[in-house]
Length: 309
Ligand code: NAD
Image (cartoon, rainbow, N blue to C red):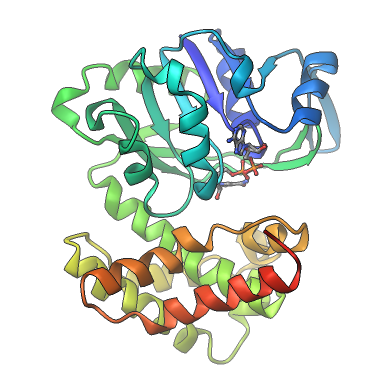
């Protein structure tokens, strides 16, 4: 399959290598010039368990891409997706399959502004990766994907897509209710990412706070009320237990969530697609979500204090 990874940072590069190793023709598309140049000149370097592997790969800036693709996997951050879709308008006119696995709620709405709903597959993934420098990722562990076509009975290639992902060892399985899965992951991220960033702590330190359940309930009870008004399944109690399961050091306790890393490296956060999305949707549906609105403002204030655009 001819596959474009649109946004070939930490996750996109990891997925790109696995798909290329399985025999697909993969192009990494990214607008970070140093990253693209490093891959073009030296290949992509992957560090795993202290060992480096270098994989020759095709990389290009969006404006330099002329190929047409069977599948475009969008792997920018949520707030970068709109621009990426605009930059790939020529490729989108060929009606490729679009797969989005990025975090946050609202990515499908962004994509639907450019792509017919029946060409979109959305999902969540627990694979992980870090972009260590231009042309260099560091990876650990393994992962999986749960995905669903937005219009299942009008997406005949779903089995082919699943086979392509699984042949690459990406452990993909169909989701029955992908919106519920997206909200579930966003609920977890809206607690752990946001509080760990505000408190400058890791996940175990958050879990050791005597009031972590009250802090969590303040976010997730609003998620549940807004989800209910939007006809999306969300279970605050189940999400709370999922969060509690992350605290052990051998699970995710030692981990600083990606928003913490974004803030530390002076990069914009995905807050508007996590707590911010629920605050906005709550306002539109007349369901108050003041805690999520305040947390969104607190993160934006921290971004402003650090000079993050
Ligand atoms: P990243 O910042 O490492 O990668 C995004 C890439 O997109 C960057 O290389 C950037 O240069 C590129 N980009 C952005 N806008 C662009 C544009 N208009 N044109 C071309 N290139 C553009 O991010 P990531 O960590 O790979 O995360 C991607 C998504 O996956 C996010 O939603 C994140 O929350 C989610 N996610 C990440 C992890 C992880 O472990 N990193 C795990 C699960 C989910």
